[in-house]
Image 1 (tube, rainbow, N blue to C red):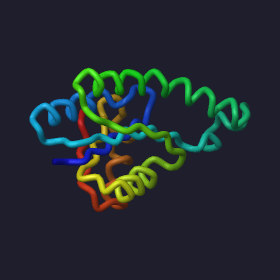
Image 2 (cartoon, rainbow, N blue to C red):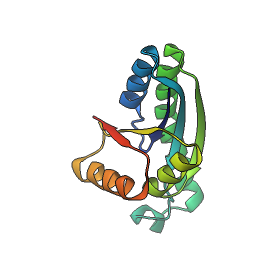
Image 3 (spheres, rainbow, N blue to C red):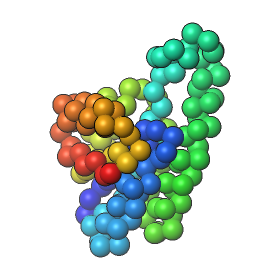
Length: 138
């Protein structure tokens, strides 16, 4: 039985990855899911020149909350046992560290709402920094 790590890396959530994990759970392939919300440091980018760090962090948390609620609803409706956590840090490094820490068997990344360059960037960073197999669902 697989231990699956699903990172939520943008405000659109990880709906496709959650659906895939629910399917695998129904097929008796998944034992547990670790759902991880990854929040990048808000001081990177142009917005930090005009807004305080606290304001940017609050806006990001609000945007990610609805995505997380939808993703969790899919797992709950399917009866998938999961754990949820919120982690701050760079996307690829944080995902790789959590995959190693939790001894995940696979990382399911939902790339359906990511642009081509962002998708490519996330995957290349993950492939370089983790020993855990990474699958992008799109």
